[in-house]
Image 1 (tube, rainbow, N blue to C red):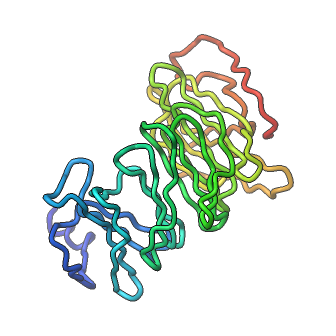
Image 2: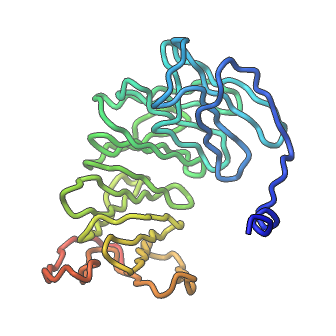
Length: 277
């Protein structure tokens, strides 16, 4: 058994690079195109001796690295962080919970600090295609990367995930109400408005974003569901067959028609409104 396992999963080290830092690495974040790696020497669980601990940027093409501008008195980890698809911009919520910092990774320079105005858990997302940053605490805020200007402040609560569509102009968020039915909400980041809401009878898990689609499952259910966000005028491509079996597709992103839990027979009719078809 072990012989075949080793033959099938044979790994080879192709490079090893020393970054010359005092502390070991506690976390990494990789851009979608694989070009940029953000490395942290501190984390939510690990604090170092120094008061100020910066982040490092590693370029996988040139094999060079640099420090991001440090923030005095901050041991920068990767909790509450996001990086653009091409690795050029990086955002991180600072430990004081009221401010997020935005860096240009190519230069290592701190570009802006985005003041949330109040403390609390904050989720972030960023796109170099739309050049927008999204943060959430007591509301959903949309910022411009280059200027750091706040473009929109949208009413939203209890957001625990933010997913951006491929061009970074639409966000789908999930809430964290816990004891209440969860929901997905879609937002137009350019015009600053909520598009629609989709309520789930039980809290979903194993959520996977796929561009304009969200695939998820629910506890006590063998059903995998796909939510497809319809944008008027956009050519749509339906998902192909899944190796995991049949799935339910909700082409109308505006409320559950039947319970996702087969044991839930409350016959509820969600009345979420939205103009997404």
